[in-house]
Length: 103
Image (cartoon, rainbow, N blue to C red; front, side, top):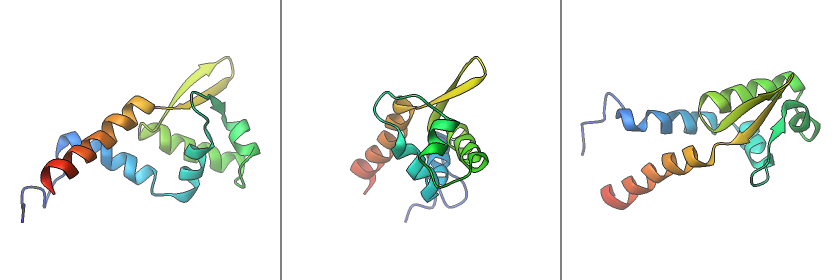
């Protein structure tokens, strides 16, 4: 048993914990899966295809952005979101390395 991590997650894994927490919600998973490769969407576009209210979609987008899953860019009055592919590849890459080397 490795007791090193019984009290604290390593600093290099903090971003992974935030990703898993953000993606632990089914609605946020659906929002992420709404994006086509390279696509940018605003809250209105996502709410159009969602069963959720626009304000609820906004909340979920905030959680995904704060976890690093999505990035946001303002264009005039609109904010467009896109998948932060590089960040997710890095985060899940750390998990893959752990699985390959430690288990």
